[in-house]
Image 1 (spheres, rainbow, N blue to C red):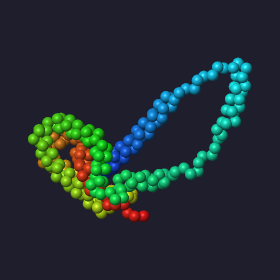
Image 2 (cartoon, one colour):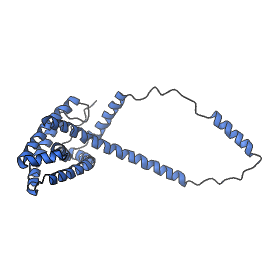
Image 3 (tube, one colour):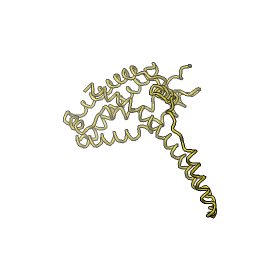
Image 4 (cartoon, helix red, strand yellow):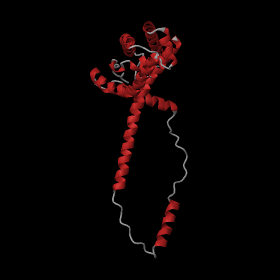
Length: 246
């Protein structure tokens, strides 16, 4: 169970960053599509040149000139571009892009950072959080969890959320979690500690629900670790320190 919880912690932490990144990438893609639609509409709205009457005497000459033009101006085969971006180059570029997006901007205050990043996190996690809440509702109905038990669970989770935010803020402050560099070892170390917190939360669940209820919810496919990881108030995290000077 502890190993499964740590695995959920890793996937939840990675899923958080991925959700936000996909939200931003999707927003950029939608913007590109919108621009393309506008350009297409403008092109379609452009006045069509008035067709000129065809001269039967000059038409064969024009047709011959068109064929020669197509033959001489056809695209010639070319060697592949040798400057194609490699996988390592792409990884380095994405690291810089991530740092520029989720790091502190020059002169940006902590509150300005929260105002900029908080809505992104909320939007990126909106759908996963909605699904997790719905799954919990369905699982609790199957396990016949009473409203009183559900309220006690929420009260216990409030403390867990506070511990998770404090733990994550410490990791941000000491550089274990940094938007400016790839620190895989630090991420795994953080995920292990997060898994421990979520494992303790599952222990609290066992004190509120009876074993049969816990088993029923588990067999329904519901995971408390996943639910807690998505429901934590990540928007309240402290901003990272300013980017190091190069």
